[in-house]
Image (cartoon, rainbow, N blue to C red):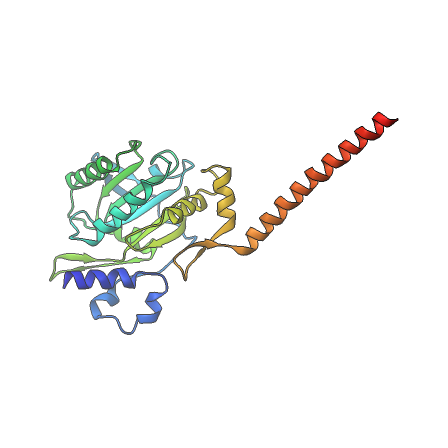
Length: 269
């Protein structure tokens, strides 16, 4: 039953699926959802306990110029949470950016019974498996009170519930890309995240403050297609960029001819 439920959750958390199957879902799956709130803000005054055991406000991890990957999960989840976090880890490993420098990852438990020791253990495992440098505050794991995680989830549109019979939390498979001000920039669904989607999503959330010139050109040429659940080529912008490059090349070419012509006339004169 767990495997079947997991498969359904992954399928139902794909873009565009909710509306198509809303009336056909099993009763237990009607209690989970993602109600997108793009451009909305999360309450940065919410307090959680980080993996060091310190009680901190979310604001401490925002407003420093870098975007944030936010994951709601719980550390004793039998399967889905680990798949989502593994997907994030596998994707960021392919980026040539360092957590804590170009972006930050925050993982927040939705289970109020979980402890700092669990958060510490989970962080140690993922940072060790990551195999690349991670700044101290670049990948942070939290636990906290239910009212805090509920308020955060509500602001994100992350609808989940606790199944008493199974002693498990049922929840969507989704991660959130946030701006430095705590605004929701993008929802990425599933348990695997394409390197390009995560990179472009972070560039978009970073609002030009991270990435090189080539990254910004790529972001100009791609846009997020909610039907595809991925970034796709935006033909109009590609044509504009191509036209602009053509004009620049032509200007250099014509300028070179004009300079040569002037030099030739001066020599003859």
